[in-house]
Amino acid sequence: MTAVDEALARAWIAAAAEAVRAEAEHLTDLDAAIGDGDHGVNLRRGFDAVTAALGTYTADSAGDVLGKTGTTLLSKVGGASGPLYGTVFRALGKTLRQGGTFAEGLQAALDGVRQLGKAEVGDKTIVDALAPAVAAYAAAVADGEEIATRAAAEAAQTGAASTIPLQARKGRASYLGERSVGHPDPGATSTALILVALADVTARATGR
Image (cartoon, rainbow, N blue to C red; front, side, top):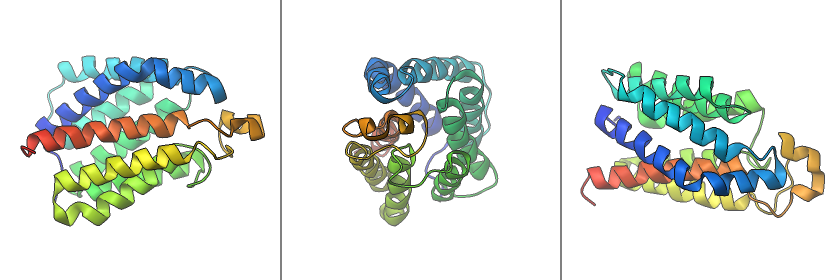
């Protein structure tokens, strides 16, 4: 069962772009505390580029929309975010285009991020939000897409919050050592934002 069709994929990316724009300053502030201070700015630039690209893009499927999103983010977003989010959406798109399920696409996205960043849960990265979200979606998908996407969003939010007491072991934040403790990871935070956007548009599409 595929969670999204082309219309829902477009709605998700539009909602994610809106959320990123609204929270760009906050994300940048979070990154200023433990990173380069450009996460929100870079991600907003990337999703603005995605919005423009999809506006003129003829897609045949959700996989096309998500793949185009990933390719655009990869080329337009600086720092670590471009490759990471590019990997997420390209993996989703590829899986759906090949006839796989959305759950399989999420797992492929997580596998790709882990391979790229060599990170696991507890390292204070995007994986801390994405891994529990993927597991929660897979566990709930038999109950329907609205329930599964909400479970994924809530798991991602919990995962992002769990990074606050952690000491970073990957990325630029790891250079700070113990000073990285007490701050949420910006990538985990933006991952939660994007998955909340998916849950919201799925709920609207199913009339809940």
